[in-house]
Image (tube, rainbow, N blue to C red):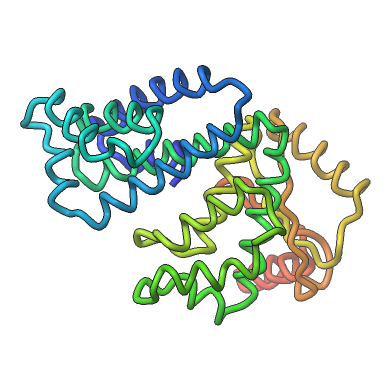
Length: 283
């Protein structure tokens, strides 16, 4: 779950807790500087702690119990994690469990959101945020186009190890380490999410980090680089902010474009125009 999505879906207390924890995370990341391997390790370890709290229900409830002493909860987290993860991870997790969350689930959501943010910061500092965003989007399209693959990867009754092995054939050695880590976490720890929707959310989080909106474009045919640049410039003038294009080809449109930016849809496809004519004739 991206930080923005986590914030909008949480109760007020959890939103405040997540915002405070993000400040602590930024301090930790600032100290890491350009040591991106350490930043990647932090992100991976935060995801591992999410997995631990998913498995250990009693521990999750204890660490999220706001009626107990926050320092006691932080000390318990430090004891549980000592020697298993790095000190930066211990520091972030201690801050998370000491905060006041509306529910154990929202605490884990917040922790996972911090893991996503950490890995996107790594990509950003390596100058690869564009690459990660594009890889997440493209992988989402590949999986969406393969119904069987999507069903297997989204099936929460399937063993995580088996899904990880299947996923490895798609991404190992073919994507940036950040993309691979984000996708692997999504697939092996779905937590009620579908893979395609999860990948779209992750791609949007990467775009948001670059302070851009995402335009999902469906075209009847491929768009060359010049056409994409013109479309991006046009949308930027319309929305008064930078726009990242995610382009999908669908010959079924028979011509034109179907563009979705947030909740707004711009239908310039031949099919869309025919439907509009039919609606006018029927009214």
